[in-house]
Length: 154
Image 1 (cartoon, helix red, strand yellow):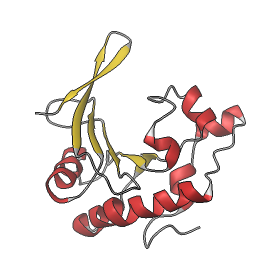
Image 2 (spheres, rainbow, N blue to C red):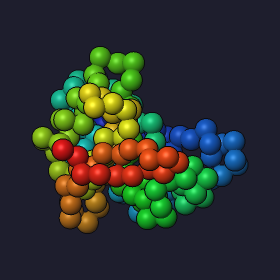
Image 3 (spheres, rainbow, N blue to C red):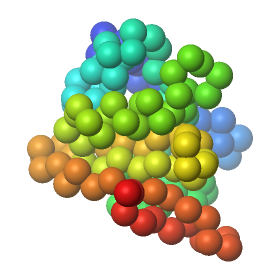
């Protein structure tokens, strides 16, 4: 199923973890509608700006999948189809460039610099709240022992 000009549902639901565990990762129609909105408001503008494919390392996660992948929580926006993780490793576009473009040009609910270094994140998490109420929250994820902590991005 095509969600937008350049993005397909399969990109959002692909999960080797779900396959191995025999878990369904099929979104509801409401979740698919959220993905369409995320494509329109965030992903298509990124693709248009950089003129190349955008790689999603994680998109939709069913509650069962989110639990076994130790996702943020049961309220994770990945579970509602409102969030994706973008990873451009191995391309001419860096994750930092994606992060900076979103931060400066797009409406979003949450933008997270996920781990990595001070010069480039390992991946970029971005969400778009389907109600239209965007917090514009910008965070940086860090490991603290076995825990992940989130601090305001500076």
